[in-house]
Length: 85
Image 1 (cartoon, rainbow, N blue to C red):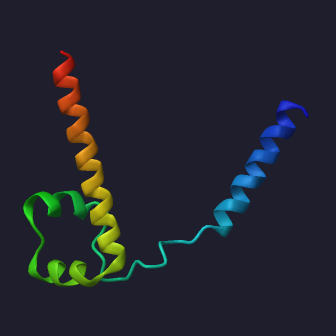
Image 2: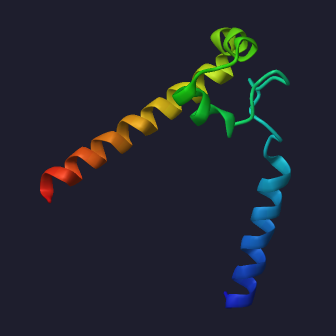
């Protein structure tokens, strides 16, 4: 297979995947805060309206858990790096 044919094939697969992919997570609702809001809200707190929503939303709970796991990993990486210096 030539490089050009490989590129065409990969682009076709990409386009097909793009068409098949959901536009958003199936659990996400219109009331869910934007993803960019989660890190700040986890540091500084949620508004009362946000708190009420995220407390009962499966999607938001998953995003919160993911953010907390990332924070934990970052903290572990930082502390292990400081021990090796």
